[in-house]
Length: 252
Ligand SMILES: [Zn+2]
Image (cartoon, rainbow, N blue to C red; front, side, top):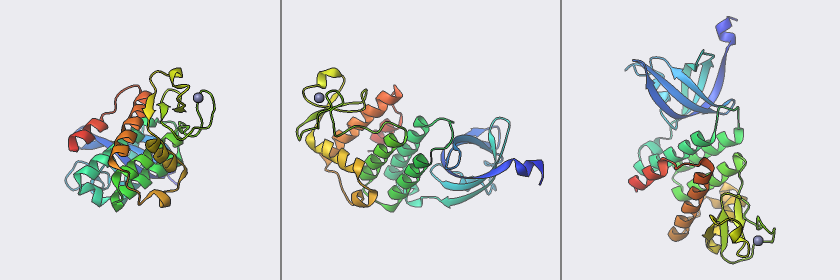
């Protein structure tokens, strides 16, 4: 075995984004099943006849042969496994997929594998592609993402007094990571009020498998509330505003 071959390896990856580099190359940010997030260079990917290029578009699930490089990994071979064509054919779905991918990019570091996180992204893209209600797909994804990165929201007990949450409006604290009861809301003055219905949906989504959730359509006013609440949570975690929600608004 040559030295080069011994330093190459296979990876299943989802393309998060790419940027142009030099005259014909492309640098890709990938989330891989086996190694987590990494950056790789596709040499000659911008040449018209490049076989690799079509397999390396954002959102594509691709099987790669990678070689260790000095700055970036080098893509030796790329074979698309899923291109999610229905997403590509629809502007709104493309925006939703861009949002999922951006969240994964923002909440992952080059820190090694997180197989659950990879699966969450692969499932999210697959479900958007299959045509399930996109808000249902996105919010289910968001809750799994929070769980996968260690921020599973507490939705059943008050984070201040530990009382079981009663069926009435509550408060939601990104800072503390879940719900505060009406007696304790002043513990975090940045906590947002959450309606009973929105809380019920969040709990249901958190504890249920996709097969139970998949045909649910969230009523629009509850969906808006959930959307703003989760954005609030992500924004707190990232300490800066996400770019893609503005993009989603622009598309809508
Ligand atoms: Zn309390």
